[in-house]
Length: 204
Image 1 (tube, helix red, strand yellow):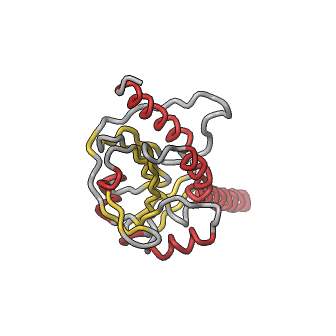
Image 2: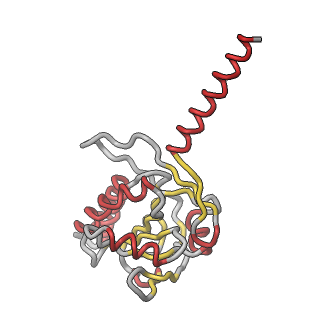
Image 3: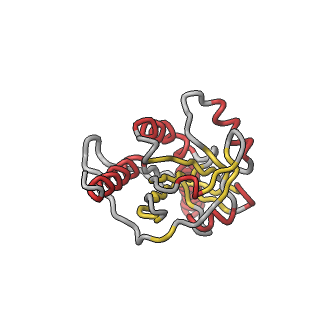
């Protein structure tokens, strides 16, 4: 009886430890529109200085959207016609998402905005939450908007796993899909590839 009791006790302790570890690695939350959001932060990633391998998604037209923009006004897919556009799906409650924003900022600062643009699409509950967060991070000047249910479902599906990124080319086609997990290295490589295609196509 004592041995069995001790075994059961250790089993409970082990299960609690596993649950705690899973809670640290990922969680679910309710964000925009009450949809279920799965937040993941996978380990790993490319080695520093290593080759970033990327694969194209099956190209498809990027769904249209018009979203409330941080700072006022609206932003639509048509605003980016002729440019590559990176959609970064994130939320203020997603630690992995927040941690890679400075990396997206570095990419954003390096791009020619006549050719490449970035839009952070927040899955938070309101644009005010996004604006308050950005105001607290003076080092960030990334364009942000609040995703709505229709747009989020169109790009991420009902599971809504973040962080995630989509890369749209100048013709309005989704060419790359990254995530779940941090993806700045892959996004940077995808943008370079798209720009090289444009340069080659123009005879440059």
